[in-house]
Amino acid sequence: MARGGSERRAAEVTAEFDLIERIRMRAGARSDVILGIGDDAALLQVPAGKQLVVAMDTLNEGVHFPPETMAADIGWKSLAVNLSDLSAMGAQPAWCTLSLSLPQADRAWLDEFLDGFLALAASHGVALVGGDTTRGPLSVCVTAHGFVDEGRALRRDGARPGDDVWVSGTLGDAAAALAQWRDGEPVVSALKTRLDRPTPRTALGLALHGIANACIDVSDGLLADLGHVCRSSGVGAEISVMELPASDALLGAFDEGTRFIFQATGGDDYELCFAAPEHCRDAIEAIGEQERIRVTRIGRIIAGQGVRALRRDGSPWAPPSAGYTHFVS
Ligand SMILES: Nc1ncnc2c1ncn2[C@@H]1O[C@H](COP(=O)(O)OP(=O)(O)OP(=O)(O)O)[C@@H](O)[C@H]1O
Ligand SMILES: Cc1ncc(C[n+]2csc(CCOP(=O)(O)O)c2C)c(N)n1
Ligand SMILES: [Mg+2]
Image 1 (cartoon, rainbow, N blue to C red):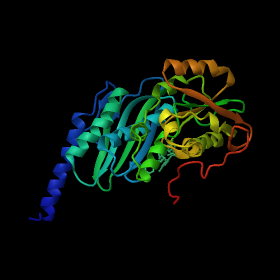
Image 2 (tube, helix red, strand yellow; image 1 turned 90 degrees about the horizontal axis):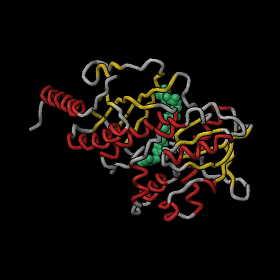
Image 3 (cartoon, rainbow, N blue to C red; image 1 turned 180 degrees about the vertical axis):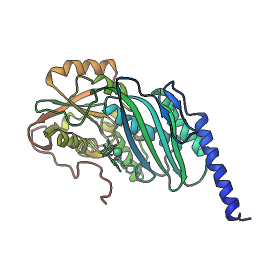
Image 4 (spheres, rainbow, N blue to C red; image 1 turned 120 degrees about the vertical axis):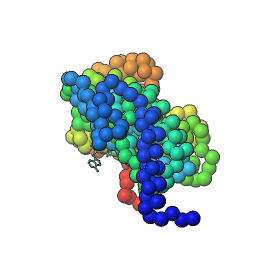
């Protein structure tokens, strides 16, 4: 029998607090969380001599992930993209908040979501300190908070002509997985993992202090994101499309022309792109070995403006777009 308005509202109130309680029970603890989930706001202790670094990113169903994405993967990715922003600032992550908009109070979905979210949080020592739970189309908004030594953050505005341009890991896997999904093809599992479970490059970001002059994480696409660094720094850049690092899975699944588009413009990579002086080359290679992460020199910063992508013979390579942009159909 259909329930009346006040009875239905009462059931929804119970459901909301039931969900919040399930989150609170698993949120993780840190000694610098004075007051976590349960009051009007969280109370957090920033260490002396540190600056607080704050990032926020949202994932919307159908925009940031395909509707059939597993709840645990949505959980992982929603935190990963935020930790990726902190890594690009060279920050040590500490806390996060989670705003969940859910079509219905589905406990099983929430538990799986938390499995992914909290596995990544625990691996980075991050405590979930608050959030918001509402009904609406599936949307996940996370903030991540971390620390840097005063004045030491890696920023977008410090690249200088003559710097090398580097990128971590490999590029294009996530975009390739998305293309296979869109085309209704079976998605190669190594590519799908890169789309669903990006790895924040936290240790690399921390190790780049005193080395990188500028840094950004690649979310919209390499050319678009390097473009942000160039604009902020008042410089230009040249990159060699041939030098862009590719995974074996990508090399095995796509021809060169398609692969270059994914790598240079596809986005969803969550690798770090950074500018560093030439004399830091050995140090950067050593960091890559120590952190067991591939680091590849893909070009250089030049005077001027804009990012130019070049083919092997030095001729310009022009992709259909530089990267992902919201509100463009
Ligand atoms: N609605 C908003 N209100 C205030 N600041 C915003 C808003 N949207 C974006 N910003 C700010 O604009 C800057 C650029 O944000 P943007 O989302 O483009 O970068 P990003 O989060 O690093 O990239 P991506 O979202 O692709 O991962 C950031 O400083 C961000 O905090
Ligand atoms: C279903 C589906 N369609 C498209 C994409 C690709 N995509 C969406 S947003 C974005 C940039 C980063 O987002 P933001 O700038 O909002 O942080 C990218 C590369 C996807 N992942 N899933
Ligand atoms: Mg953003």
